[in-house]
Each structure stands twice: as C-alpha cells, then as structure tokens.
Amino acid sequence: MIDRSHESDLVFRALNDATRRAVLALLASEHEPTAGDIAAAFPEIGRTAVSAHLRVLRDAQLVSEVRDGKHRRYRLGPNRADAAIAFLRQIYEQSLPTGQEAASDRSEGPRDAKTG
Image (tube, rainbow, N blue to C red; front, side, top):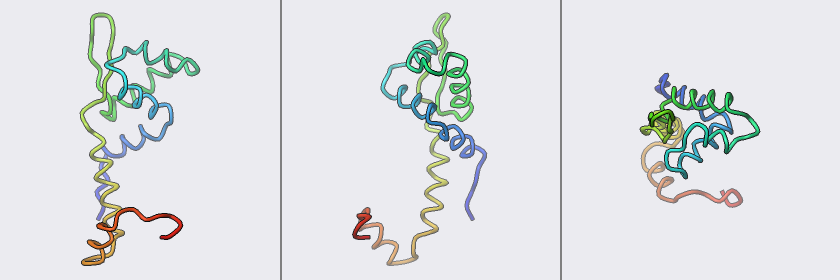
C-alpha cells in the first residue's frame, strides 16, 4: 500500500505552480535573498503574489525564513521534498517486476525512448 502523507501533499501542491518552482530555483542560486529581492525577480506578478507563493513554500517546508533586522531572508528549507520523493519511489517500485527482472531492469539504466 502506498503511504500518502499530508506532508507529501503539501510538497506536491507547492511544486504544482511554475512560479513557485522558479522561486525555488532562485533560492538555489542566490544566498538568502530578501522578500523584496525575490519580488524584484518576478515583477510581472507583484509583491503580494510573491508573498503568497512564499507562504505556500513555507507551509510545505520547502523554504525557511530568517529575520534580519527589518527584512526577512529566504533560503531552501530542510529537505522536506523527501516525503514526496519517497511517495514517487513507492509508486515506481510497485510498478517494477519482482525478483531478478527488477534487479536487471534497474542495472540497465534509463532506456532510450526510440529503442525501449
């Protein structure tokens, strides 16, 4: 049976939005930008929308917030994506053949879409 935890639901919900994925990519490349820095990187959506996206990412614990005087700085959170990764791994492993075939299939590596 596949374990579908609330934690992985929050992560998948957070990752379901392209802007939130872009914010995560920004946080991976920048050292603790402020909310204003992040909003400046996304001028097309505005500060209020950026704040809402950051809240969703915080709720999923994909980002954490650090107070720095009057500013809030953001960084990638503790690896909460683990729950979502574990969920995907369970689904994938259940779809594999059992026994020797599974071990053989995994050792072959990814297959080319043309050759199968």
